[in-house]
Length: 406
Ligand SMILES: O=P(O)(O)O[C@H]1O[C@H](CO)[C@@H](O)[C@H]1O
Ligand SMILES: [Mn+2]
Ligand SMILES: [Mn+2]
Image (cartoon, rainbow, N blue to C red):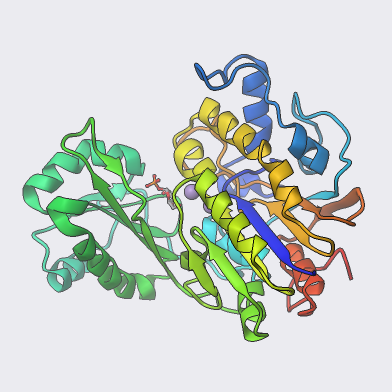
């Protein structure tokens, strides 16, 4: 078998990006700072975890060593030899520190243009854009119109939204136009239609994604976002590992956000699931039935959405430990000839100011039966992953990135 399993731990950066300062993120180090906080007793979660970060399986795959390569030091608790595969770290070349930029670059399509962004002003959106959305979607107006954290803005404006029928439009440091609306009061299908209109309207502004953010609940204390989030992305400008595999007739399975992130171009069978555990279940299920030459690509979103953006150190640590505990199961799903790569798309340091992503280097852990232990060093682009998986799958390296296995 020569199959590939590509796992993106959303936001699990290892610090050290040489251009972090240009992004306002100097010193950001998601894994390093979570480990330090845990070692200092600031990562305890009653009944769930306590004390230093313990990731024995990820350490054996080289996570601690990838931190050393990325940022010059091994985080506390992550010392130990990498005995179970190739390990390294990667620097992003794309201009954005967002999810699509990171994923596209991993898949061999770096983003060399600048995304459009909305200013940190109120209102944040051009008046003509807001008015066009109101007119075309038949809205009584919009709320928000500013930079915000999504969990907070539904607490602040959710009741007014339900009362007035005005959807909550907001953005962040990413190239995003997000619309939050109540699933029952506003209607899920109506929210999706509104987002489709917004997608057309923000195209000329170079906005990467429109995101539907449905929520339920009766009052600010019970408002909760649901798994019916939907991302409307622009398509990648060049072929990706996914589109190249699909074009070659390979079995391709995209799990979780991957279908949306790649605007459903070459994404094959799309499988959705809610939460890291269910997403990994779905990916492993798909992988077990995958024919020779196939590719499963999964994004584990909780690190980012539930813990990174929420600046929840203990939750982040617990999520890392929960993933670590499943590595033996993951390894046993790999047959001779298979290759698994674990990496990340950007950082989201839960100890950092604000609530946005942090520009960071990422871990690159490549393993499988027969893959020797050793280092692949500091890769100068995430695209080296797509190039190496392209070589592994016999698709060729593609236009970007330097394979470590050619
Ligand atoms: O605060 P929430 O709504 O989770 O938004 C976050 O999620 C968006 C998409 O990943 C990011 O751009 C960031 O704004
Ligand atoms: Mn992401
Ligand atoms: Mn994010």
